[in-house]
Length: 526
Image (cartoon, rainbow, N blue to C red):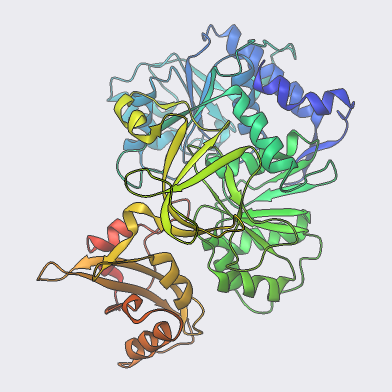
């Protein structure tokens, strides 16, 4: 098989080539347009002499060109490696060296920042391909120079015949890589195989979200993230549906404008974005009646955010749990059963078990480590054999998450295993405390971490962003302490309170708890 052939088989079998595939700015690209471009890329990459299994580092915005390169590379047997477009040049050097990429595809406006650094490095490249044209580059000849031949994507692609070079592959053959967010150190490359895309499209796209050809998907999370890659491409393409692409950085005003402009039926985002959109002017609150559901993943969705979103916009948010290593969402709420804070179910095609620290199964009702088994799991971390081995126990992947399972099978996320806090011998889930804090009208955002005191005893510290209309007062810590104790056991109430302007978060919207523990978050304390 080849993932691209399998992905578009439904479209081809049903002769849906004239149906819309991508909405991008003022353009509507049909499936025929997209497949033609993908075939041109696969033919062109092969003609350049790039061998199968070579890596292609892709630093691109959410555009049709990104999709053409990503799927064109897979079709030709070349391994695309998309990475975050909002990183410093040193990080790109790390990705190039770690992956051993022979081809670099990069946005024209980003190339001037990387070119001088690349010129001083010893990274061997066969080709550098510039996306979106020479006209975006400042008129400095040194930025048009490169130790590797320089190509400009659009004229290069247009010159290629639409004759696909399809590399037949085993279902378990590597197809693409995705780097982890690197929240616990340097990013790790998770190697994914051809059948993973197909499995995720079936189990989550078709069986959970019930995507049909009439759906239009829009994602606030970008294509270079595992979550965004599915939302903005293969979940839709496998069913003959369409996607909306937004080139600009995901910000609340941009996303809301796009929602009202393109009127998608499914909207995907991380909790931080849902919260930011709610925090905008209350005048922007017309019902999003064209949406049949929203989906959240990347971080736990506070029940208060889900409740306010439904109240403001009249649509449910399905809370989900996924990871780069699992490719997409593997635990999710269901359509028609998206109660805020009500737990979620295992996605079809996956198995989970909840175990103690020794790997022994725990009874329902106890918090334990989540182990996962399923066909979309990565095969290994590139060049990290020992790290890969420690993540697996036979076929089971140790997710690093803590959950609580109810007798009916519903799972309640408790936080990352490394983030769980033991206070006076009892475990505390920071997520549980944060969700309670988020229901207080004075709180806009919150994070809870454990920090030892001078005696070495663990204390709960709360970092709180107050709403714009709330004035900090000496008694605010007392008010919030009492508020938490009214909902949770007294020992779960934070002992130390910090008022901050914003929480440090990763590009995927995850709270950087380690920075808070190390004091980095204290820099923004009022």
